[in-house]
Image 1 (cartoon, rainbow, N blue to C red):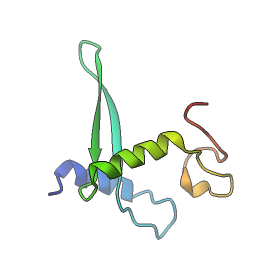
Image 2 (cartoon, rainbow, N blue to C red; image 1 turned 180 degrees about the vertical axis):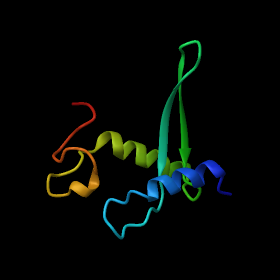
Image 3 (cartoon, one colour; image 1 turned 90 degrees about the horizontal axis):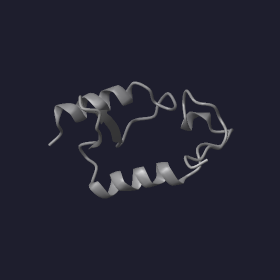
Image 4 (cartoon, rainbow, N blue to C red; image 1 turned 135 degrees about the vertical axis):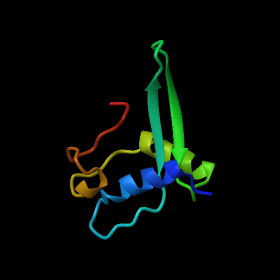
Length: 88
């Protein structure tokens, strides 16, 4: 069952495809929240048709791979081209 929250995130992400005819298949969203007392927490939301294993794979790949080569700017729209590592 797809939740209202999942539909809203999918609609927002679908509006910015990397290339014109690309179709969103699945997604994972991590968010950090600050409580009134200053403590923070993380939440995770995954697309309705995704498994927990897919979400873990997306997060692992996002943290441990190089983003994107200069000749593929559509992999990181809105950000500078060239290789970037999260741990750099």
